[in-house]
Image 1 (cartoon, rainbow, N blue to C red):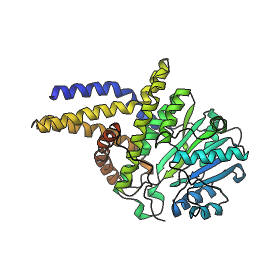
Image 2 (cartoon, rainbow, N blue to C red):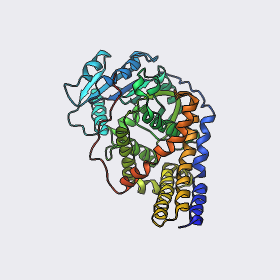
Image 3 (cartoon, helix red, strand yellow):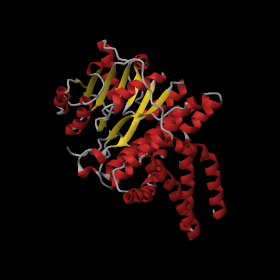
Image 4 (cartoon, one colour):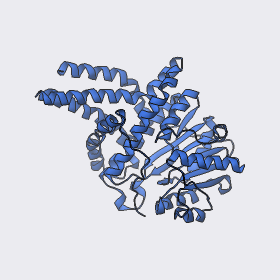
Length: 399
């Protein structure tokens, strides 16, 4: 494996991955503002087991919504009947459900949705929000406007909220580095996919699912993996369910300040992605037509990166073992360069939301590729079937 091989695999990667890179620039054009013809009625669902006081910023942001209070109901789901969250939920007049059997977020959502449907209460949309989020004051209003598109699944723009949560201890190197995942998913991914009508990545926080679709499901059907959103994405593609991303519906997510907790989440995500692809790949490739082929390309494009990085990593290791140090260095630098390009675009796309000086933002660009290289080991473990046995609680900023 010499330099010629390294250059050949790199040129092939650039050719194959170029369409995906072209989509990174969609964020430079502001998304068009929408205005709904009517105001819809929403159920706001908050899975909140063992979250304690961490739910308080979210509950305060729900209370501060500009949307009419009579047009949405809040549902909070816990596991323990003695959970202190129940008291906080009652303070905002939320409905509270206790599901003592839940093992995952998917179980929690299924329990809540089934009980809402059984109650006879009708909603035009079901909005799911994680307990570690804060909603922009106009979040529900913007979600209502986004329903004008006719999409059945709508996602809002997710932003790292540690910079603005009012707690100095909430910002450290780990939170800054991991916070770049949201502009990568939304600004460098969902913005372009939404603009051209491809299936967007429906992370299940800050997401709206139309009421008629939920009623058709009769509950929450995505519980085969630890990442229900990866299943939802692939099922939407297979069934032709229209998705949309609306960047004006903003919510702020708390990033865990611990590197260990961050890696737990990343492991769960990658394991779920691998499992979801194993479950759905046959259905995805049964779809016919050019547009289905293009949609599949964007859904599975991460595998292009993982294969390229995996080949370079193996090349670097082999070159080190055989004392071919120039080849090892070249492979490492190419891996770094690939992630550096992504990091630069992510920081630029989220520039105004990153509460750091321009010098620290530059440092973030330089260090983030090294942080991202950890995915080499995380994806490797997922592919080999080494996975967490169950959902694990992630550490929170203390309030």
